[in-house]
Image (cartoon, rainbow, N blue to C red; front, side, top):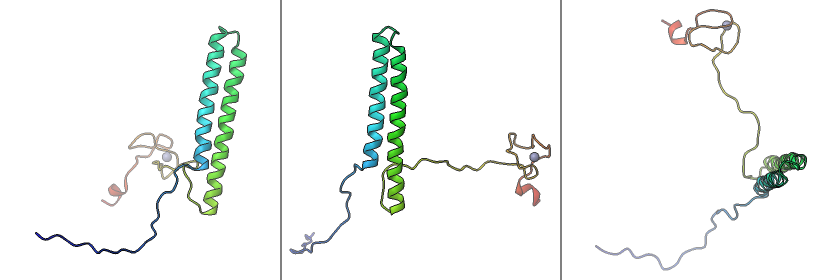
Length: 133
Ligand SMILES: [Zn+2]
């Protein structure tokens, strides 16, 4: 068994590495969660400490916590959309609707709730395999 002799010289090459993981949109997201949590806990403490008399203040604080959370989430979403439009990588997900496939009747186009029959217009539902037999 001989040893493999590595060359004594090498060239400097450039390699892409992740330089930083914390983006501004993620920081805004985390700030939104932390502030909403702290404000909610404060509202609970106020409610408990005042033995229910501060329920109005606690309720307003909860609404404020939600609105602040919503505003900061909107800022984070806006940053993601701006980065997406500019073609820059961004962290997190852009909110929105997701599409799903559902089975529908070919006659009335309503969603099928039972397997073999349309509840809306009545015909027996066949699959493509059964029609070709
Ligand atoms: Zn139908």
